[in-house]
Amino acid sequence: MRYISTRGHASRTPDSSGRTFTEILLGGLAPDGGLYLPESYPLVSPAQLEQWRRLSYADLAYAVLSSFIDDIPAADLELLVRRTYTAEVYCNGRGGTEASDITPLRWLEPPDPARGEGGLAILELSNGPTLAFKDMAMQLLGNLFEYVLAKRGENINILGATSGDTGSSAEYAMRGKQGVRVFMLSPHERMSTFQRAQMYSLHDANIHNIAVRGTFDDAQDIVKAVSNDHAFKAKYQIAAVNSINWARVAAQVIYYFKGYFAATGETGMESSQQVAFAVPSGNFGNICAGHIARMMGLPIGRLVLATNENDVLDEFFRTGVYRPRATTETCATSSPSMDISKASNFERFVFDLVGRDPAMIRKLWSEVDAGRSFDLSGTPFFARLPEFGFVSGKSTHADRLTTIRRTYDKYGLMIDTHTADGLKVGSELRTPEMPMVVLETALPAKFEETIVEALGRKPERPASLEGIENLPQRVAVVDVSVDVVKQFIKDHVC
Image 1: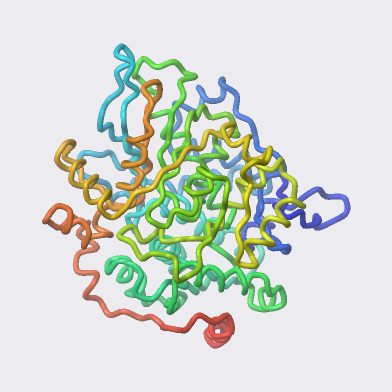
Image 2 (image 1 turned 45 degrees about the vertical axis):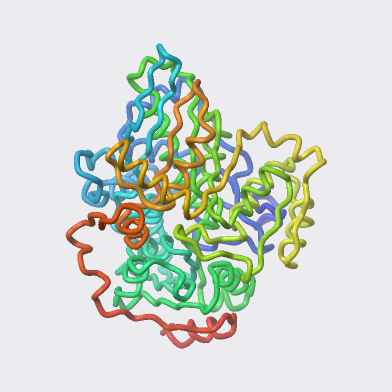
């Protein structure tokens, strides 16, 4: 398996058509500013699907990842995934769930094939140490990084940006890891109290939090600017853990397969039964993994993209216009992890949409990088959009409050604000012929203020996280400045 850049960067050697998995693992962006993707997607046959159906999560992870990774010995890769996906790591699930399932499926409305009702379910992805779906990939990434660095005898400095969940997931995955330092940017005072406490209360020597006086997009732009300074990146061994990192996307592909098997198992459905997935999305990484699973042959009938008030992605899928917003136009919402107006992973999908033409991607993203929009409406590319199964919708603060209340009253289930966005849009776009599986984004404890507003009661949280807001916090607050962040890294690298 070899990897290429969406913008067509030349391969590392004349006799090689691309880079290997471990060669792109630490870097994030390609040298030309593009994102890495496989030269071609591995295909999974119906027979393989049926074989995979019976696997545990760790064994399924090994099967999926082996399709993307051929430069880590099989025994080592198997050991890494078994160390990652354990009941001990993913132990924070709701009562009544089996921790060893890793990603339990919870039916809100069970399917009834005899009546032509596909059913409605939530795939619980937030049972890891930071109560967010980002743990599903980040825990693996931490183990992969430590493994590769030990083999090479190297150290790295991870630079990332978070809108709420990536930061804590990365820090919990990397804390104490040999050869790794983390510099995590976040938007100052734009995350929930719990999210800030999760990150800023960590005092591990290899963890550094930097709050930027701006939005997530400002923080993400700083990360990209530093990554595109190739001399600085090389000198300070800068690596990435944001969803631009291919390994994170690959790891997220796994739970689409697991969710599919859970939604179609023991229900009288045919093995080829299609399933719809509703995905709350801001940076497009989570739903991009669903797109890749579908390209691999997983029978996904619909990928339902749900945004909050920052509806850049919904606008594109409805109109063909991709119009990233300025900082002043990006709303602070009650689903803050999706307060994003320039989706970093979107380039991966558009690369497939335009027939994998890097020249077209360079043209389109030259507009994006210049602060402008692009318009594919009326083009053959936009006409192809239905081939990829995407539909979309948006949710507002009032919508998510209503959805949280309705879900609690009707199903006895408390959900977080982002999952509410996915459930609201997914419910609107359900079709009777296929199950609708909503991907859970986080446990409600991460967004206590809005849960109290919706339900008048506080959500439960794991005992280990009680009182986390009262712990001493350590964070540097800075202006939006690439140079300031570079200097901070210089000052804290030994």
